Image (tube, rainbow, N blue to C red):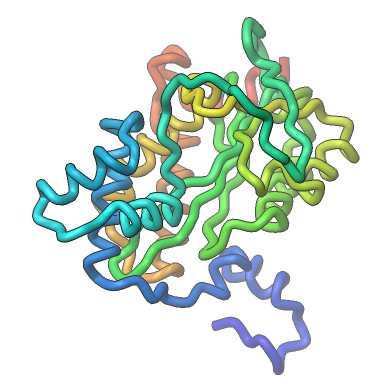
Length: 272
């Protein structure tokens, strides 16, 4: 379908013509064992129920599910899928951070219009024979998914590309909020926001409520689509998510939006 060598068209152009994102083109099946993939799937579902579980409790829980695991193995799988245990703790020391962190700017802020605040995050997506990562940008006021992408790696360049495409299509927000992941704190990503003169906001470490809207989006996407339709490969995953996000934006009514769709609210508020 995509000719990487003989075509006169660039790979980017070919991907746009067949409606496939470039990150999905380079997908290779992951080498994790079938049991590890099963554990990753269970951890992904369990995160929405007990995000406060750490490696010790998850090890006990998995043993109760019949898996012969130790803490070292569970910790590696947690890191692989991006599990971030939520808990309150004292910050008694300042770690040596290579990248600059930015303050959380949304506390007490009244979000009343489109393009006032955007949020971006990455989540783990299980497949039949592997997994990929899903990245999305949403408008917080209208819950409109502005852009999304799937990839088999999490890089700052990938995140920059997804955010840049959203800005090319919809303009730019006043504030752009992310977590403190290395992809978002890197100069590659923050440099784009600085260039566009967008204010940078980052969640506090271990505070789920700071990015609650996009966390709700992940829960919705997974329970309404991903867990019901397990993809066989990256192409099938992309095609399924493409249909779902069209449904989410254009047809799925939201109670918080007065049972209107995100697209209707986004265009209405933008026009106003």
